[in-house]
Image (cartoon, rainbow, N blue to C red):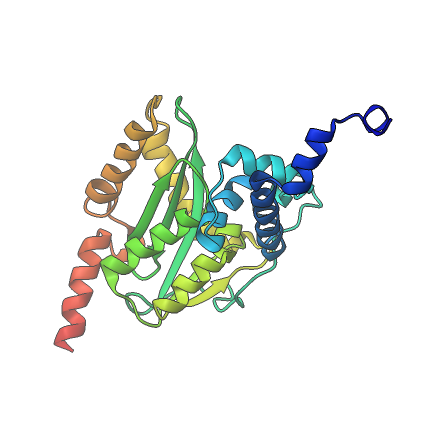
Length: 272
């Protein structure tokens, strides 16, 4: 009678009783808990970001598709996955605004700005995170990847630190989830740098980086149709290192290039 009413055999029942929770269900429970914790840390994190963070933070491995399914079952939607509108809110800042729209510097490595932009070659999306020294307008660090994760921003920061070895530098950014992630904040602290975050809706806070990205768009991205990420990546890096840093003279720098400006002022500082 019990088999007919409940719809399973005695063998299946005893098998379940011997091992009521499968290994996959057990793993899914751990993955779900980790996803909930990471989403609580920042609701702006989407499932792709969560899948990256889960391996780093919790030591768990799972495919993006599996994380997406668990993410969806718990209705852990990213704030940025909603349709954009006037009521969309930026994430909470993890740093005070230390710049207060005063985007000037009197020496190298005093103030850096960073932001992320995305571009679309035929192959798929390409994301660029760049870090600029306000004093010389030089791009001191950058990272290029197909995915917009915290690692994109962390890689750009590491690239900049390897080049400049800063100490006490203020790094100003918007409130993007990549710059609010624990990994990025921890790296700032490890390198002895101070984070700063702009206000919501303050266009002037990001004008310096947006003007640079606009220049990149005009001089590289709009010049031709790009078919692959690798092709566009090479063009961006070449323009940075060969043209923008060494050939493009800027009025704010006394018609010097960023490299010339740094060399001249470095010699003057040593002489003083």
